Image (cartoon, rainbow, N blue to C red; front, side, top):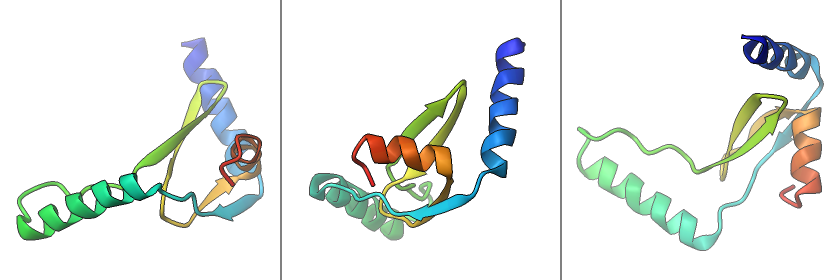
Length: 88
């Protein structure tokens, strides 16, 4: 229970931070897999549309899943973690 409260507190802090716009890249193999999954989806709409591959980033029990290949905004602290990891 305390862990859940901590994660919610962290989320509130992250939500209040300035945002940075980023776009994480997909490696060529990942991009090909995604493109193939989209092509299969478009051929057979009964399937669930594939989502972008993601990079998980966690801070004190709260996890962001940042899509690769799609521009998105992230809180400053998340940006700094990605920057230190060499992803932005």
